[in-house]
Image (tube, rainbow, N blue to C red; front, side, top):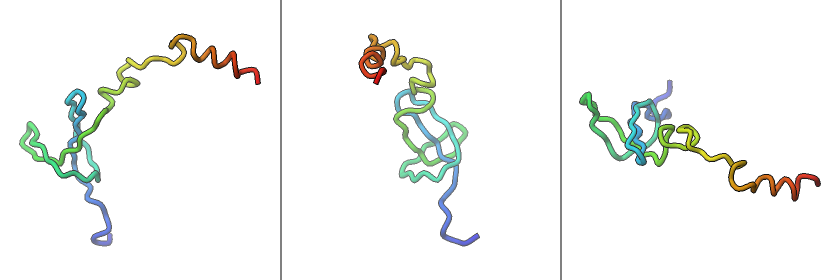
Length: 82
């Protein structure tokens, strides 16, 4: 392996800001902050707006477009026959 061309691949703590969910995985993400974990390790911190714990698709709270007042059906009636 050549020296100096590979990214810094290490364990990083990702935090979902919407519900404070934390998970640790290996990443090359650049970070400026660190976080002290419960087991005593100090890891780089990467803040997320949403993760699988808060995203509507994964939590089952996503609304279907077909149930939103018949908008899809109106569109199909107007443009579906062309």
